[in-house]
Amino acid sequence: MKLIQKFQILTILLATTASLLATEITHVIVDPCILFPVNESKAAKFVNKWAATKYTMYKGHFPSKKDFFTALEFVPSKYKNRTYTDNLKMPAIFTDWLCGNGSNTHIKNTIIKAMQNSSKLADCEVQVYTDVLNLMMDPSTFLQTVDYNSDLGKTIQALKRNGYTIIFAANWDNENYKALKRQYGSVFSTAKETFISGEMKVVKPEQAFYDKMLTESNISAEQCISIEPETQFVSGAQKVGIKAIKASSNLQAQLKNAGIRI
Image 1: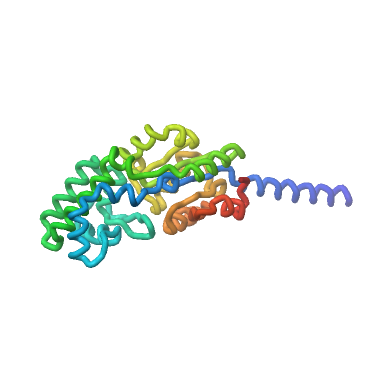
Image 2 (image 1 turned 120 degrees about the horizontal axis):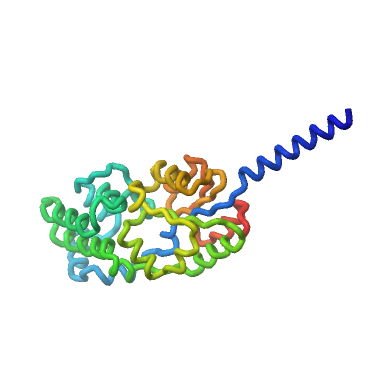
């Protein structure tokens, strides 16, 4: 009888251990956009000051992302799914851009032509938005507008030293991604794999993005935690079973609270 009880206890312990091992987080998915934030002051230098002044007088406020995105809602696009930045829904034409449906120059020229032909946009709006498109879609200009967050970079490196496999996954067009990778090769070498929308032809927070990433990495959702820049991306990751957090200024504390060794 005692032998049977011992066997039962051992079976339970083994099953519990196997369950714990199966759900242990071994992979940290990082959206590298958190490592390369756009410096608004640097970006502003690429916008014509006189056009920006006329824009402010015309609209009654400084140029904003919300105005920019709203103004481009009418531009035709192949993709209908939307993505987000700074909690703002981006126009569908930007999904075309981020999914590589044409070169950056082609997408930019398509948008500019549509703006120039629109009777709803003033000349100052077209000028400002054209300048913004140039800094977004020209890789050499884009590189001059982003900063590298070295503190976050050190946190990611610490996670790797602690035994976690790092995976980068982001909404990025191919051209800007390649330019960043050339300039910050050591940063991207931290990741075992990198998945970008420009190559996957789908954007976050679409479920297909996360499903494809998990399939190609040959890992399960339960093995992962994802560090995201947008609330919508957190929700997208969670829908497929990935534990996810929205990165804050105190990322290390967030990771510790999530049970991650850091």
